[in-house]
Image 1 (tube, rainbow, N blue to C red):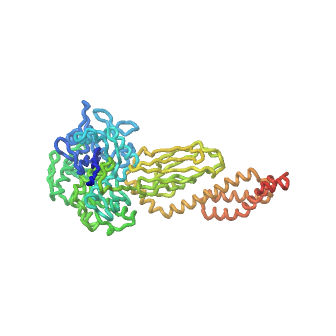
Image 2 (cartoon, rainbow, N blue to C red):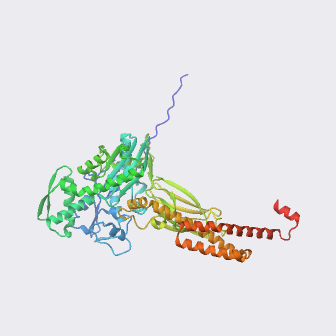
Length: 612
């Protein structure tokens, strides 16, 4: 009798399509992993890059992309460019950051742009860009709604949430927000099978990001990140445009026209050494040499950020195995030369720098949709700044440290400071300093319903959860009752220009001073706790002390209060030490009195029962 070989049917792995979206400042793209091959999806004209420009018309029609971009010079107030720079920000942030856009703002608390078609928020404008992109995907499969959307690594919680809100308005289900440099690493890691340390240098239209990754056996671990949310190719365009206005002796009203000419000239100078530029009646020549002079300070700034990231990861330039260039601005020859010289190696440019982020996002989307490949990648990202809680006296207790891989969760136990305390105020802060006043306030919330009990008896568990999108949820729970309160951190404003880098640099510069300030405050906290307990003890048992001891203790209390007022750590410590004998005596007197009260009127056999 022959044996039959029974084979299980091979199931089709890819049943659900998802897309990767690079929502850029200057251009946006959408890509999809179709049958194992990532494809950039195009519009009717077979164009891959969608200009991130939206034009609103009086008849209610909305133009997105190339058609909108063509109207920018003649109708700048109704044509919105670089909206990504406005995401998650308020009016004060825009003014502080020096963002220069020819827009009319609605006079309201919310950030809205005034157009002939009405007022629109940055979220709504971004949603129109996303709608145009997802329309391309609907031609492949009308059921597609899932997407991975990329954001700059240094987008804060407000900017990330604004991106999610825009996607929701566009009818997109966000599988994950993915940092742009990490998306590029996914694309290159899968293609090259790289091992070792990789630095991703991402300079797009409006933002600069640098990420240092460790690549090992399919694991991409982000060791450190840095960047500047207000630095990119737009700054180069602006510098050229202002030069053109000066040369042509035109007013700022001609800025939109100058900006169009500037962008065209910059792109041409990528391949030629000089270009003829026309603006109104003026015509002149712009050389690559002059352009290099303008961009040199910007490149210097990016290389400083690269150096800081290396320092954060305790690595040297010689430790870097690969440098990946991402973003259209990295096409500038002088930038490539400077990066090559700085890292002493030729950076990778195998994949089109405009497409690489979208490709990585599409690969990640395919994995999250369940279409896993044999060489699936485990993705780890990091918290850019430490997260913590303000403690008594303004001291910060860091719960999640800077550069911790995310998603992450950390738990810490806290207690009450006063007797019968039934509520607890929690102040969540972000930063590297030791005192809350020097950190960035993220949120405040309260936990109520704590059972009344002596100070130090309650146990409050505080849990920090950072999800894969970098959003923070903080939960506080009283252990005996299960009473809990929580908050998802969505700051009402974003980080100002260079704030993240300034936070890190200031923390390093102030390290010794901060440590000393923390030690002083902790000693003050200790002394105040002694005074609080002593005040309660004197209210109950002051009569146990002799007049001499009582007078001496009151004198010591005054000395300790003066030491606290002067914030002199050594003086506080010395006063506490000198008070110890009298405090010990008072404690013994109170203990003896309590024992006498317990044994009063008791018989010997009753005492035996009490003591057994």
